[in-house]
Image (cartoon, rainbow, N blue to C red):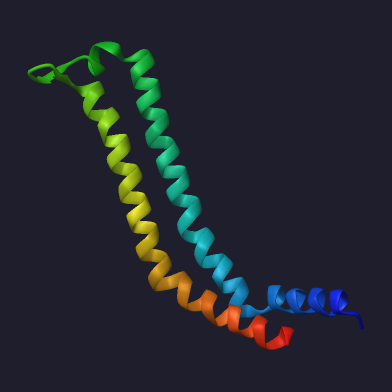
Length: 109
């Protein structure tokens, strides 16, 4: 068996392992719903900006209107999602990824 064939079989074995499948499941279980939620929130902002101008131009205080607040909340949401993902990855993904990495390194030697 050549090195290339050996490497492919190691990675195929790891891909089929229950730990790797669990890692993918945990990643998808968090990432897909969060992506859908953020895109829906962003689409709501865009739709309201285009078709609900009176609502978006409603003054909240001074020259600050609903549209400006929603726009700034887009940035806040982005940072919150990045923070939440880093926390999720640190607790749920990284330990399992580390285990899978060690398995790959052991099998590749």
